[in-house]
Length: 43
Image (cartoon, rainbow, N blue to C red; front, side, top):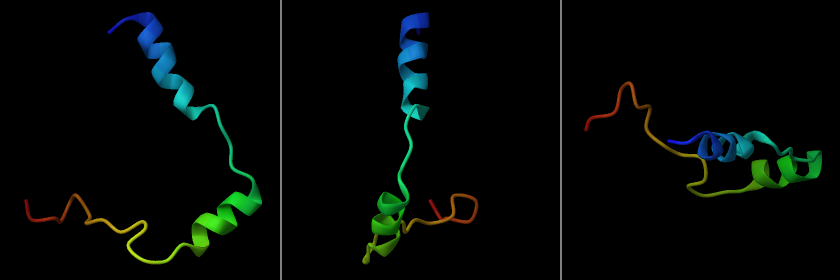
């Protein structure tokens, strides 16, 4: 791992979502957002 790679990875946090974006995400239906709790999942 290099310092350049670390900086590149930290860039993932350099964004924001507008309220309209959040409304659209929250309105999604189906399997979106479903996952097992990793502390209680049977592996």
